[in-house]
Image (cartoon, rainbow, N blue to C red; front, top):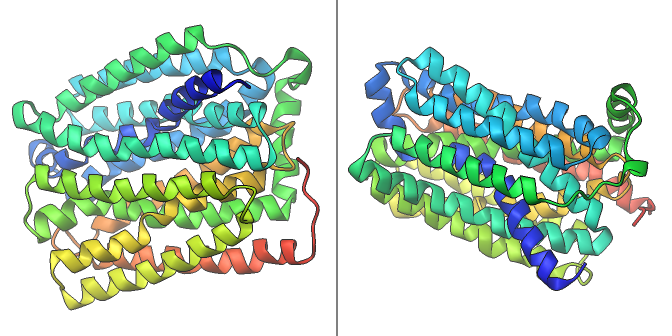
Length: 399
């Protein structure tokens, strides 16, 4: 692949993968105001985040096998077109029930962009090159959580939360247009013959204990990470009393750390084993989770709380790039299904945890801290029990 095409492909796939943080992070500064407008409890408002995440989880399970059988282009184009319509539906919803339905559809259709983007990455690269490419993808993707809440916060200066979903609809329209111009990466002779054979790939993947270990590791991380995402707006705005604009800058700064650390796997691929980078990520995440719990229990200053999150949050990019690369190495022929599981199961875990963050109300961050600490502990345990032993036994991996 020539350099120019690689850059264009990286940007295109990065924006597709960024649909998750775009759909979740951009409206975070508006959550407290939406709470008042819809006149519902904190947990129900946080369920609007869960609805999208659950939709993305279920959508990826379907999108992966479909792309393995039909190719990448057609399912991707249809998915982005429907995502655009769902975003427009969110914009005009005047009842929380209708809004939840459109959020679910937004997740189901946006899932096609997420899972197919990762499958395309596996179509085009492998081995250390896949790690570098996926690291670039994570870096481009990392710009979304930086820009999304900042943009969302600024939109609230002159419009309400509906303006956020208008922008999401425009982004969806832009992606739909780009998909039409996209060149197919999965040859017809490499596709699954039918839906049944495509979905049967899930059985083989679940029997692969090493691959399943990576799925469980990412499930634990997503539960942790989305507890942070869904709880951070209430933590900073309701407990520390910062403005939506200040919160968006704090959230954007933490997301900057994801971009910076996301460059490390790209730079170190082929020089430092992915396993060592992954071990570093899970260990530092555990340290960050402990520090955040200490800050919550001690009711420390906002500066110390932010510092603890700077220890924790950046590990997501390192963990994502290295774990994805390692888990996909033996699954090039079923890249769509493998990518679907790696995306859907963690997204589902994150979605299920999100409402629990608000069970104690918007003035108590302890549930958020507990979920983060338990998630970090499980991430570390799964790594040492299910992933590290396979490498210790000297298992062979295909290119």
